Length: 84
Length: 222
Image (cartoon, rainbow over all chains, first blue to last red; front, side, top):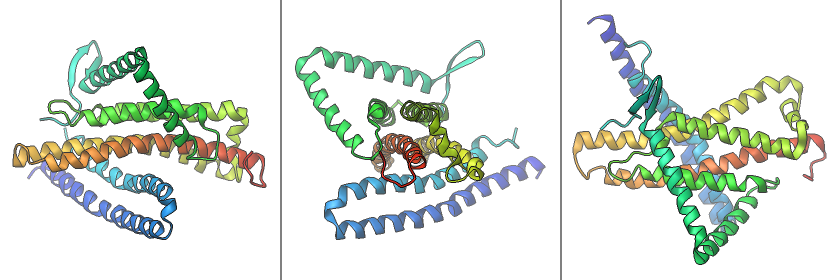
């Protein structure tokens, strides 16, 4: 294998690792957020609208860390600066 | 099927991509639809009622005075909702999967928040960057930059990942298999449009609220 192949191999493996490891945190965080929101809604059904709205915004914010990982993985796969 | 923005034609050094064409066409269709609806009494009245309801919903989301931003946020919802959902039509791709469009929309949101804060507070709104302490100035500026970047990347990443997953599943499994994934991307499209508007509002309101708090440290927004 020449150096280009090694770079391609490392990029592909790293892209997979990025997505896999990078999804763990947001997944746990989103699970906790949804669980807390469900608990709050069952205690106070009147506030369900506000809670749902805040939950959506919060989940989208938490998810953005996973999206950053996706962007990094996409850069590694499709716009890799080291590969010609 | 290439999920990335592709070149349609080229004018000198200026490359016109399919997402630019889609953006312009979509804007024109939405504008023409709005103009057409205004010509009919019944449609106009329905739209006005919808606008009233949405305006009250948006204004009641925060305690800060954000009424001047309501048209921008409703426009973002309408445009992003349409732009994200356009990707579900076979043969068309949603223009928001292009980072350029997402970044442009985030820049609009950024400028709108600052202009609104300037109009409400004058230049003293900049005091939010040195509150609670001038030592935090670099961190505040960094926070401002990253949240705008995050706004763009969130929309771009969500929409591109939807398109990408669809393209990969079509290539691997064949026709009609990605339909459940497309149903999921309907949800993503609507939620991302909603989130984008709400985050624009929240960022604008938070800078106003910080300005109010630093001007009037006992709390109690005026």
